[in-house]
Image (cartoon, rainbow, N blue to C red):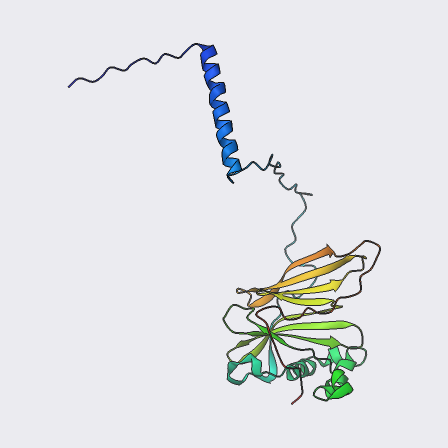
Length: 259
């Protein structure tokens, strides 16, 4: 068996190679144009140059502990409130607020939110008196990802214009508060498994948007986003918008009433 000897390749003269290259490029351009007409990929233009962040004050000693106690992870068992059958839908929202007032008397005493405690006696009444109840309608959705509904509860902090927002879950038939926040609230939303609170800003035409998301390691709702966003024309303050209604997949409770 004889191996075929390699055949030396000879390139055509340079002018011929150039002409062939030009013809090939023209053919490819035509084909690309045809593909584009047929819905193929098209160039999006030049890509912006990535710029890495500049670290400021590299010699600054990093802090090892927070300067202020913000209370990012605060959970507590609600004492005096049972969860029949482990079903959070059977928990009375008014009883939950009353339990919070009883557990924190200093927050609802003279000079604080004492009117909230007084107005709790109006809960369950009909007519004008019943509408003075500070407890708002409760909403239910699985925010912790365990396949069971959790309860989002709000109530007005009086005197003043603050609204307290709380999230509760059930652990072993015990009611556990996993999120607490209060502010001059202009809107509250449930988006997926996140809770979003909108609050008016002192800067006209802007609002604060804060988002809490469940963290399985801390077993609490953590503040994961805190931002200021533009909502209107500068120089004109927008009036606070009412709280958002229940989004799809959220079941509202019946109006809060006393037992």
